[in-house]
Image 1 (tube, rainbow, N blue to C red):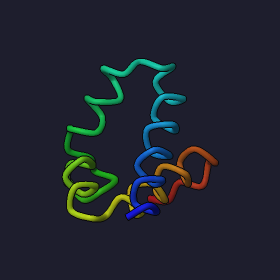
Image 2: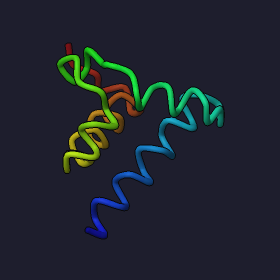
Image 3: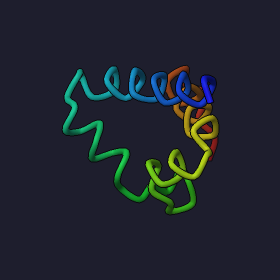
Image 4: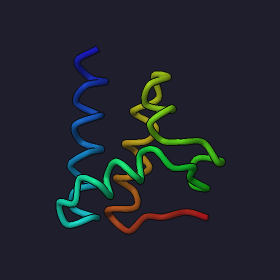
Length: 68
């Protein structure tokens, strides 16, 4: 459970950087369907126990290692 919590914090940290600290945009991104996740909503994935998958994808994007 602690690892899941740290993933969620890392997700929010990366998103804050992407959106210049705008919490409304962070929330909007988390709650919108994403093609990066097969049309799933990232928050639903996180709630379903897949925070690490979301975290890994965001870290890859953040570091420039985006795959199509």
